[in-house]
Image 1 (cartoon, one colour):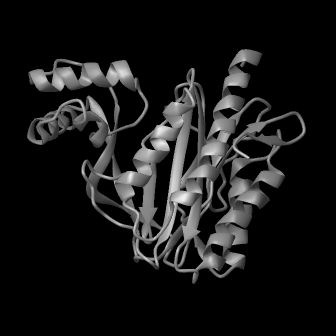
Image 2: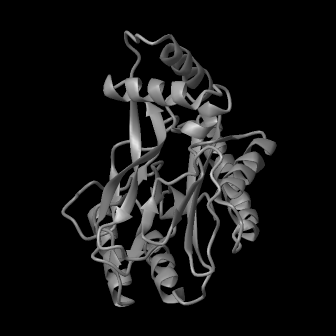
Length: 298
């Protein structure tokens, strides 16, 4: 990467950090999930940037990939464990960060396990460190608090316009021998749970991304693809974003179904801990430097 590109990643990280901290004031009992998501996304646009993906608000046993539906009226409850996952795009440079708030005040140790796992992982990241060993540190830290890491969720390499660029940072010890290299950018995101340590896909899907463009039959589907390409490119988007520009719910749903069936778009199912265990998540985006790493979203 040249200096300009690195500068954009730093800017995306700086903005994500500020908005992450500002957004914490929104996480209160009785607030609607839709208001929170749209307020955070508005904060991103007001900074002259774009969301790298729809704001995720995953509650209790839901680990990831939930963003509110169009006209969602769900409220935060007094005992909810709330995970906010947000990202920012600046000229193709992406950042990804997340935090957890325990509204009931009874699961602070679970949140702490995720936070300390991230801190310990960051301390050991430098050129030559194997990602599988970082996963081991995350696992050891979370288990040391009496919880389990989620084995089938992981952090991920980030490249320009690619939120998930192939290489993963596991949350458990593995034999993955990829070694961090100077200039690498990764999102590291430990998930800690009171459950069995695995997530499953639900049928509920609100987040999509473009996969390919081919021979699309429905005129409405072609219009949606054109809109997605123009506004989001290959980055994830929410059905509610599309609904704002294509008012008919039935037509949008039918179009998305056709696009999914023909593999023009991919869906990101909501992920739930298999034994309904509570889940906490903490995440930073880091840049690997010559002797360690720089936390871009700090």
